[in-house]
Length: 309
Length: 282
Picture 1 (cartoon, rainbow over the protein chains, first blue to last red):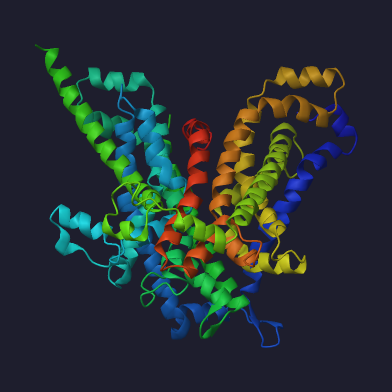
Picture 2 (picture 1 turned 60 degrees about the horizontal axis):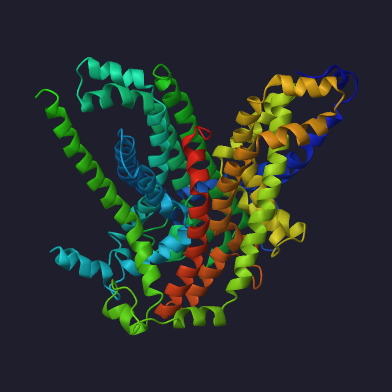
């Protein structure tokens, strides 16, 4: 496509188009990421000097009890956080999308717009809203549960070690269920009518049509939703920080990688923040996300390709 | 008979469908609704009957008065607005320019730059925070809105390039060739032919860029946390942290943070949903 003129002279116009954007992208996004990976191999002395220490930050994080206990705790919690999203958010999103795509549905747009609304709000706002709603002081949830005869089961879920993480996961699910719903709904709309008609003519039930025709066709979208959920979850921070603070209490029961990263980098109460240990945590988060994305690309994408239209 | 049966069945199915969707809509709206109605009530009414709408006896704006008096809500709001608008402008401009260069010209490194930019869609910019803070302090930008703007431009570019490329590819070849035959320069072709044609896609990109910027807490907390430079999200977070026991103020500040987003959402929801469902973001 290059014009003849551009082949002769130096293509200044390409530099003009790419220059400013790439300059910002490279300095503020690519360089800091690479520099973070580099910093994770150094140790910061008291006077601020950096000395190269190889992989010692990582061996501390993974094996030295002082560091590894919080690290594995956060990793494990983060995994639970992700599993709740996969088992609750995405199936509900799928169900809502299937219902929304039923033919001749009235008020389709209203449902769609309203269910998506919480996704638009700031995680900070959502965190505070649910903190109020679940507060035993205000008692809204407690009273509602008494009304439907479940009052005995109410508890200060956000304050208990055993339930805080699960409750926060569900709050996050509540906020973001609109995203899988929208993306899967779009994929369902994209299925050609002839395929559905053919299957109905062949006498398959609604469930059979869904399971054998629609589901395989929307698999790529479900895969994409899964990887988006994965990246977002292993990068989450705001909700925990808003509701439980940087210490992710009670007793670190809600600590995930994002909050661990924040504390390691900035410090908290007794512990001093560390540039290089923060970089090491960020590097491990980067690796986790990279492994997730690679798994998705190599396993999932390849497997579903034969179904894709 | 044979025809009547499936119809009856369909009506039952439609009923169940509506019941489920309506229930979920209620679940989605209830928390927001409760917070907004209670922000207009007296403290006593908030606790006595949280689910009642404000009546003339229980109506009170004391929470809003407190918030506006004790915090700089207007300032936070305008900070957020400046950061979002400036970032979106540059994301759209630079994003379209990169998208055009990558789709239109073949040159050495085209593929490499494409992959590098695409990686930014999946790899969160947050992971580079340690060095971003370092970079911003050596540029003397810490605690300025410019630090946030630079980060948000870098954050928004990858998705913008990706979406806009899809649209630029659809611009008919004839339009560009005709202009080139008339001796129009490449830069003029981009600004006078391409940009007007991809304007609808730009609106979609703008909405997608805006949401994470407006709602972000991480970078304001780290790069611009001090007085006068807080964005609305950080401002609300700090304010509520301070006045956590003052229920009127907490509810009012939440309402003040929610309502502008609701209004914007009502105006732009068509644009946003069309963008999400048109396959532009596959």
